[in-house]
Image (cartoon, rainbow, N blue to C red; front, side, top):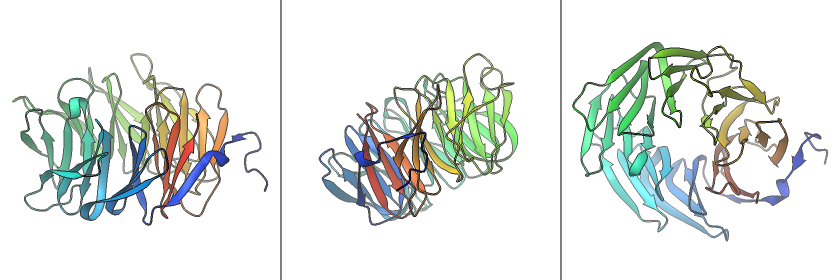
Length: 335
């Protein structure tokens, strides 16, 4: 078989795959156990010995997931917010009184949890209280700031910054259009949102300075910060788009770095937790690793029959979990 990218090293043989039995909509790790989020009802746990456990979590579709503090948080169309630890015993954190869909979830510092339902955002405080905030529209994305109990919420015509433990009014950041995802830089200085249009918008939080990051072929459906926090890798093009966030102005007036160009769109990205490497999953099933310094590529998976829909690194960066829309789950051992 002819290698599709002769300039790239291949580690395809280091991957083991299994049939998940449903579309995979997310992937996370609890220690060395990979957790694949299935589109319907269940999580699939796969430990380092490749032993599988399927855990029923929701009574219907799983719409959102986030990992953190040795547990996976999920939201479903059953109106429930669930926390599942490695013991495979899901616990309900909250159930929406109106049984609205839980379409966004986020995990923050010290195990803080946020979720959205309808035109409201909710936060579970450290003392177990639930706080709610009314929004101008449904939340498009949630992201905690790294310090303080503060949540960024993307929505129609901008974003809101909310101190959930304070009585002060939320701070509004205006920019016309639909904002559908949110990412806060690891140093807490920048907020970036993905929009309905093929563009990103950002704010420098110290002064509200706007940043517009355009040039995409399609809507940006995935963002991931580099290990040093100085770059934001994004999907939405036929290559990884890596925006520079070093310096006080972030990407303002700077061109992004472009890596791992391919004939199909990048659908999902995940930065290595320790090294200057980005994993990218393409719409034709290809998975590549790209070194951000010199552009060196490694093939993790050859093109398949369905788009890559999930990527996740373990904490050590030695194993990459991946999933596809047609239910293929895989673990690539890169140690």
